[in-house]
Length: 128
Length: 128
Image (cartoon, rainbow over the protein chains, first blue to last red):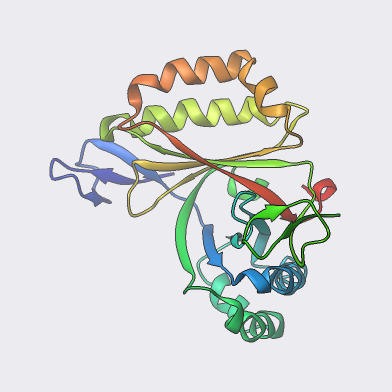
């Protein structure tokens, strides 16, 4: 379903009076979290994060929880968190596995982590 | 399987004489392609890219081909291409659907697209 348009001022709006169609509705929320860890913490971070991912994919609100690593810079990880709806991230943060992970990795970070939110375009929400 | 270590000089190596374990073997290649399109091309780009993704996921070498969009900047798309091995991207580029997509979207780009390669950490290669 189409929900976003853009007007002559370049801003996104929900008004269909605006001409250009730009945003389609999806209930999902996809978050990419970039984490740079200390060199000596790479293995421990990987272990803690894989354990968190294993538990997270059992949550009803989580469709995927992938863990990726930059091969040219192994201290750089990307967590691909695919939530089925906007409430799921808050539910996730209440779980023991998330809280254990958060506390375990706190001292492993080389810098504060950053994140980027995405809207789902393909596949359809049900196909995730 | 562990394949990467890092020495005192901070460089990644395959030598187990080096102390810190940093990189684990995966046959997969995950590529995130960031595309900024012209505002007036958002809908046409979405349509062409979804069609390409639908065909791409039928390729034996492709595990996923997700299309995401930045909700705060709808002209920014992220293609998440998950290849089963290092040869799969070249096979993909030989397909008619890729070539049609490439030619169709060529004039829609607001700037050259950029990409980032990732190593798979979780889930296991077979679980993608």
